[in-house]
Image 1 (cartoon, helix red, strand yellow):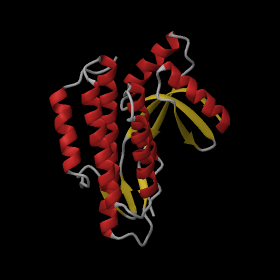
Image 2 (tube, helix red, strand yellow):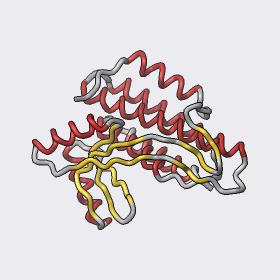
Image 3 (cartoon, one colour):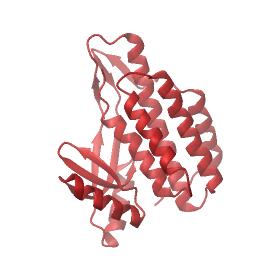
Image 4 (spheres, helix red, strand yellow):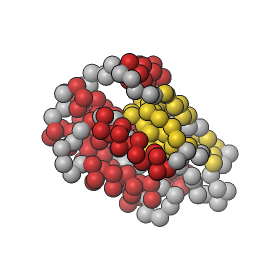
Amino acid sequence: MLKKINLQMLSVLSAVIIATVIICICAISCSGGKLDFKNTYYFVCYKMTDNAVSAGSISQSVSNYGGAGYILQRGENYYITFSCYYSDDEAKAVCENLKDRNMECSVLKVETGDYRLPVNTSQNNDQLYLGNLNTMHSLSSLAYECANGLDTGEFSQNKAKQILGSVTDTLNGLLKANPSNCFTESIQSVIEDCKRLGGGYLLSKNMRYIQISIVDKIINAKLN
C-alpha cells in the first residue's frame, strides 16, 4: 500500500524546500479579502471522542500500536489519528487493512479553501501567508514520504534524520520570516515536535506525527 520512493527525487525536493523558504505559487491566488489555498487531507482515525483526557489515553495506545497518535481537534471532538494521506483511495485502503486487524477506524476528510484576511492586511502579508501555507504543505509531504521510506526500509536512519533536519531548518526559516504574527505559535509548535521526536531512534510513526502536526496547523490557520 505504501508508495515506492525515488530517493534522488526526494533529495531534490528537500533541497528545493530549503532553498525556497517563502515562495509564491501560481496555483494559489489572493482576491477579495481571502486566500484561496485548496487542498484535501484524509486522516485515518482510530477513534473519536469529546473528552480530552480520554483522547490522551487513546493516543498512547495508538502510538504503541505503531500509529502517529496525534490528537486532531475539530470543533468539540478529538480525533486520534493513525496516519494522514493525500488521496481518498490510499486512506481507505489503509483503514480497511486496520479494520481487518480488528482496529476501530474511519477516514476523516478535511478540505481547505478560503482563508479570510483582515481588511487591513497588507499585500506583503498576503504573499507571506501564501508562502507559509504552501511551504508547510510541501513539508508535510516530505515528512509523509520519509515515513513511507522508513516503513519500507528504503530509508536508513541517517537519511531519515537528514530529511527531518531539512524539515526543521525550513521551519526555522519560516519562523524568522514570521517573528510575530498568526503563524508564529504554530510554527514554533511543530519545531518543538521535531526536536522532541528526532532526538533518538527515528520511527515512521514519529514522522507521521510531524506530518499531521504540520497539516493540523494548515487546516486550522487563522489569519490576522
